[in-house]
Image (cartoon, rainbow, N blue to C red; front, side, top):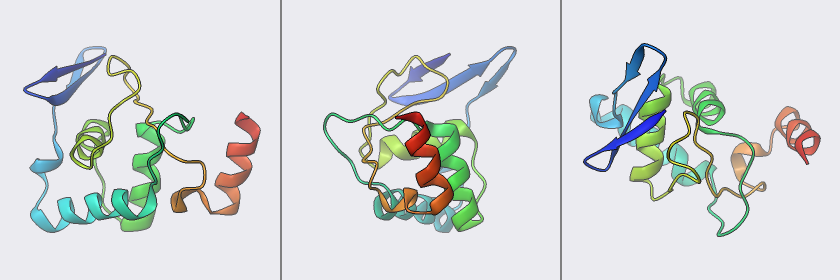
Length: 116
């Protein structure tokens, strides 16, 4: 379950709580994560991409080499202007276009087609 504290996410997984925020990273890494979100994801008003915060954070890590927790990625998405579809979920989904540059790799395109 995710709760919001002062506008920032905190995610509880069983007995563990992920309170890490994107601002806990150094400035270079934080800026690189935010730049990846800005350049690799495209916002839309109504469509909800099936890939959630956990999968997106792995896409970002593969491309940048920067590891973040699921909570840090959710915090970064909020900093970049994305709001979660359901903020109570552990793994947030966002209003992201299926045509976002992040999804232009053949394996991900096949995965997207299977979820339609």
